Amino acid sequence: MAYNLLKGKKGIIFGALDENSIAWKVAIKAKEEGASFTLTNAPIALRMGTINQLAEKCKAEVIGADATSVEDLENLFKKSQEVLGGKIDFVLHSIGMSPNVRKGRSYGDLNYEWLVKTLDISAMSFHKVMQTAEKLDALNEWSSILALSYIAAQRTFPDYSDMAEAKAMLESIARSYGQRLGKLKKTRVNTISQSPTKTTAGTGITGFDVFYDFADRLSPLGNASAEDCANYCITLFSDLTRMVTMQNLYHDGGFSCSGITDALIETIKK
Ligand code: NAI
Image (cartoon, rainbow, N blue to C red; front, side, top):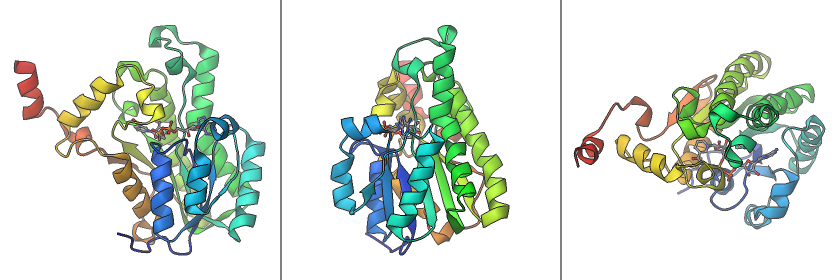
């Protein structure tokens, strides 16, 4: 059911690779709620993924951009404003990648060049997006900027490796830039800390199935799905949440506040 929550709003959605992507679900919901937006992803993802199907469904233009390239981001913001006919009201940063995780390097054997890449792609790009938007004066007042995070920023999950550092940095950037853009544009900046979700990025983590099950059993509501996450993103882009900023918002079925549950006790007893 749609509520017209984003009627007339203009946005940029990063990170829809395929129909499992969280950004994909956000795009579908944003369209249903009356928004217009451009879709963007890294050039390689445009070739490998199925973003064009999404673009057709949403009647959205696809503008390629490597989120680590300021030049690409400048082009993205300029073109998006042209295509959408005005400044931007919402941005979704739904980007994560670690070469160390992807290539199976353990935390005690990190390749530091790859670590720099992890941080650049998964965290620094968030700063680059906002700095580019600020310099181009591309944001409307009361706009909303959101990135997706994971609780490994606060607690350790061994196989999440250097992505934990990236998420901690991402959340910190949300606070620092949230303060700045709040003053400049009344723009809010938040991160959503999402449950493990079966996507390309999620399932790329070793042992994903185990911590997916563990989180599901530890969360009173169970794991939050990508679709639920998309609903939450829509509320944060809407005018109903105008005073929420600089927060890391847990969207995890209660996982972050749970010590142990009966379901887990029963499993351990066996
Ligand atoms: P996904 O694999 O569908 O999306 C990740 C996206 O990042 C892809 O579209 C990929 O092309 C894009 N990307 C990678 N390098 C890029 C670059 N240089 N420039 C632009 N885009 C680039 O997976 P998912 O799960 O939808 O990931 C979205 C976000 O949600 C990520 O930040 C991820 O860390 C976060 N998240 C995911 C969870 C999960 O279990 N799947 C849990 C909590 C957070």
